[in-house]
Image (cartoon, rainbow, N blue to C red; front, side):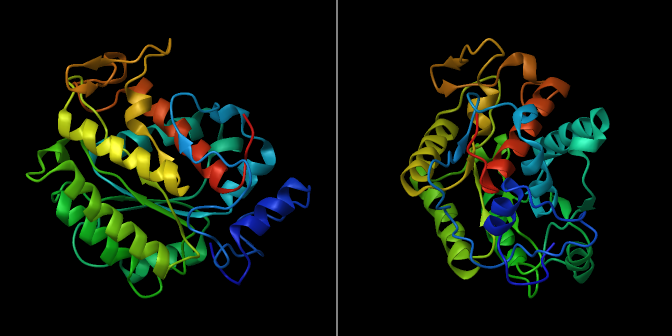
Length: 289
């Protein structure tokens, strides 16, 4: 929740020093300005994948910092699986993982004033299950919603993810990637007070060449430009023993993480939900392992 001109980095530095603020309801320190889109902290690890530290290793001061954020997540059904995983984490350890949650279904148009008001009154997690209007609409409508007057000023972190069905793009992976890059870079330039992070495209139990090529482009770009990336494809393709699942078209979803070959079951949902907490900790400045 944002109310004045300090930054996410200020919160995190002060918390690390042990200056703990009151709870989210008072939110005396804003997270709006002076935040560089790609991140500037020395030693920051920007990509969250199957090798990343466990959510349970995030220190308490970073958990406090995460809970001060206004987080916006736009998604469809696999994202809904991830939200279920976040709910499961909160149910298992409310003191550590519970945060206020707003839920919406904005598929077309701009963000409503009630959504903006929710963020102005809460720190926490905003869940927009916008369904599957097609890859082009997902990109353009995310852009439009972030640009709704007053919305970017109310949030701290924003992301949207594609679904595995978006591999039906009729152009090349490069054109697909370029269209996403244009929107993401435009939003970063226009709203430097918001941290935007990327996702790879999720997988199915059958590898797909378009998905694999797109994900390679995303990883290369984020690595070269210090962009935060939640690499869901890497997480989904690695079994608990670390064995990577592949076929002739590239990486594929580990069968133990899915109920139907594409959506995530309870184990898969929890796996990615824990990674979500880790990327928020990284955004808050956590460089630990």
